[in-house]
Length: 421
Image (cartoon, rainbow, N blue to C red; front, side, top):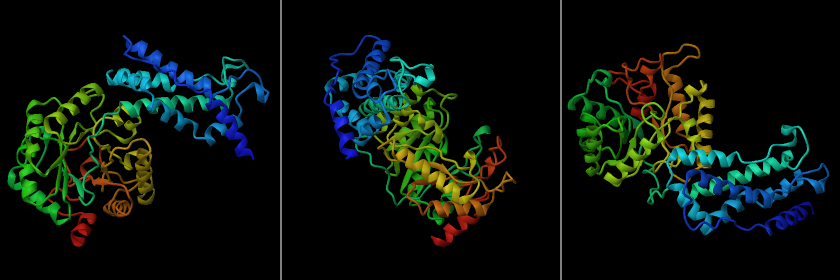
């Protein structure tokens, strides 16, 4: 009986709901676009959330009203209706023409458009809302923002992700130190690739395409039987590096590109990164993305950039020092992303260092246990990283993330992978 009453309450509200966005063109300024966008949020809030002016049930939006709204999946219905509305689609098209920073500002303003609660304003009045009413208004604002973002998000041209059978490893070479310009020769790269192939790795993820990593690696990896290469571009405006990466697109082993790595906000801004991603995609006609730390993907503009989501997801840097809890944390991060995007997801960096911190102890055993357990889940990931990199000295653990030591001798997990392969 209660559910029937809740449904009737909700349907009575929905029957009044009409779409108000009738744009036939784009407003002249960003501020006008923001006003129009917020007016749509306000329209749906007014239609679905009763004005509250008194404490009695008939005078305010109650928890029962909120239950009715949720029982009929009210936020999802708002999103669905807007995505089908021609006027709202036109507005979304206008929003898509803005810079990423401008849209981020409008999105934030829209998400925060709701009345204060009576407790927050210190009085009962029409200018405020009940706790239940504010919660409903927040949900509606989020639903309108979600509808806009789904319409703004560029299509991925059918990209469904990389072959599931590829075992990826993040690869920076041995005999390598970019800080002093030290690059490995061809013979050294071949020995690296032979080592990784013995452990069953079939896909490589790189960070830069300068020197032999751009000129030689695609050919050598294909020669060694690798099935996939995701080429990194470290300097997103480096003419020579970008040119070498683009030239490698002719190789069938190059499956995609990652433009930049954890450089947002200090090596480049979001607008520059977006331009570099789009330019690489246009030049190569292959999937392109970028990489930031997992927490940065709370920014929907970043989440929507590129053909797949490729974050660095480190339990170590998030206070997880035990294998089982770290695996659960990693899986939770993956499932959370799945709820926010339809794009393919591949975790670029996950793992544990094997030294550099005594308490809690980092060890080869911890690294091995974490990866063995993670591999039994549904989380797609690249092992980080192939070889210890002694030149990384900005944190005590940084030289010790490798599955292999600098002389290519295997650590505990690598030995297990070699034996299993």
